[in-house]
Image (cartoon, rainbow over the protein chains, first blue to last red):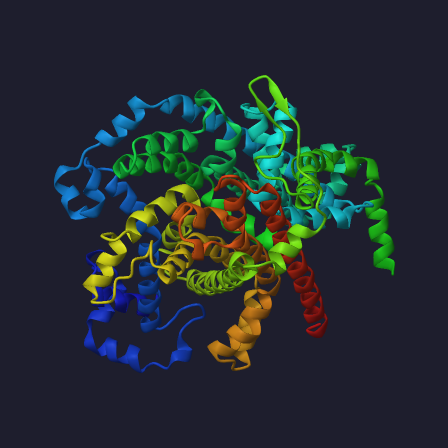
Length: 320
Length: 316
């Protein structure tokens, strides 16, 4: 505990600080002046002046507010029962209701679509991360003819605009008989997520010491066995980020899903709900409710993986 | 030399067989779903295909392709043809400006927040959680929320009127549309940069800061000579990815404006519009835009990496 934080606590008069000895010293005017006179260099490393602390808390608070506001706003709008409520948000407060949610869930194939989305996003996550991980491991540990070309391809693939791919993909899927099937859409999504995931995971694998592989080899594991039984369990943070990225891409995507899934019982949640909303033109309160319903599962997944995000991403970005 | 030999021995266990087996799934998926479309896309650019003359199925009748091979005419038409400025160059300039502004904002704000989050302070975990949140919201949802907020009576203009500032028509005035698009995309893109840079900051050894402080370096000097060099590898990667993703940022502009706002369309959304948003759809021109886009990015990436390599050499 630093005197600086105690001082700011004193200034904002936080009641929970009352018992701490720091507050007591800060309460004494004499102690206050000595703190102020003390030269900056005496502060321990990593601790900053009260002004800097207040400023950083202030900046972070504003930033958090900006980050949170659009999400809260749409959740709030979704509680308004009438078409034009979004124009007068203040009026919603008195008549909040969950009617929009019950309406969306009862009048649509909500649960079917939810199931479809779960299958597609889950499938993309599992398949995409698995094949990305095996590729990432190969390029991290092995040098083979074609290595540089593969890395370059992974980078270039991310540059492909969706507009160029979507029509030819449609032809291929229809030739393979994969239109309107989960497999087709899962493969398409995997193709879009795999390049980045493989890149990220390669970076993460690079940070795992080579000695572990060697130990595995000495114990008689094949390279694939080493990868599967030793490296993958160690790479959990990297895998979590890759899974998060894949899930999110597949969960909220609309353009591919609406082109490739033709029958309404195969719609994903995003496609189904947006088609429902466009039938009820400009019923924005319904659209808001559907948005919240789409965002919730993503938020759950986010909460599950967020601990790993920093470690997982760092390694991936630091070594590429 | 010795190190290289040891490494070769270490790597020798990895017979190519295993390597190819492990990359095979990705190569097959990318080859079929990305490689083939690319080849077909390039072929389409050399034709005059539109939705009226490509092969299609009407009932039981199959109508075969009837478009012609026209060589490089599409490229010539887009780059130098009549009204090329309105159709291509104006969008090109806006796309470049959009990419530059967005990436600078992403990086600048991301770095600022990462520096703040890297300090020892109370509530750091909570701040971090909240600040990454925009990344977890599907773009579809984000953009819809922003549309409500940017609408005429929405929250943004409510705030501006409260502050007695002008209230632009965000979704209809051409200049304000561009500003709105940049605003939304910044909101969407900052968390990724912030988290990546935060990771980068945490991997800089504390001893370097202690040593710098011993030598009497001011905070600015420490930032300039310890933090920034320590972030170089992370930065070069995330900036490259940022440029690629922003250049191709389809969802934000498409969902924000639909097919309106001709001035705010970047090249990707413009290409999509030619291919899908009009009747008859001009597949050939749309594909040509796509290939041009891809070429621009490849050229940029090549120069960027060469520039990085040269910098690396210069800085040891």
